[in-house]
Image: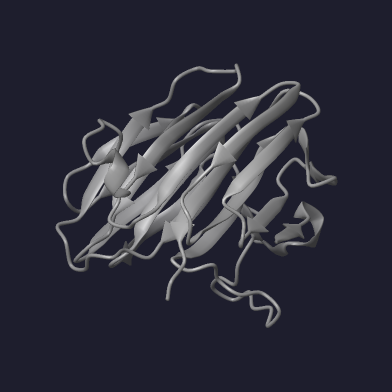
Length: 235
């Protein structure tokens, strides 16, 4: 089953310095027709103006992935980490027992990013932060960016505390197949391009929820990229 969430229909708050689109209910935005796809609970599509950002604030027991689509963000936290995350990189943070951090766009251009929150399956772990360079890959590819799935435990990809994977899929023209295990569901956002999925046209920054299917055939209409979260079905 496929549910399509068009970008221009997403929840929206524009604070001037921050223009946030919400794939799920978040903060002061609430739509009773929208439900979280647990353990995935947040997917925000943020546009942050130059020389602005999020001041120090705290998180606990959440896996937070930040995917930079354009520009950069500078992270600083209370456990000694400072780093700039640029386009072509992701940030993976396990809030665990508690972390306080700030995120600022210190550049002179807009920053566009996805912020993704996944509930962990281990609680009160030691908080950690990583900034990871991604491959510059515009060819057809399926790349695991971060995961807590057992099948990736011996790989060198960043780990998260949940039986879930963050996947980047690239394509240009034609079909590309993604297959996962049973008892999984998926949410993805098309970060650029245009694809067809089960004859449904998916455009840039649209979201798609898929369940009751463990094999997906993406038809790329032009050079495109999507970020997909492969998550277990909570029972």
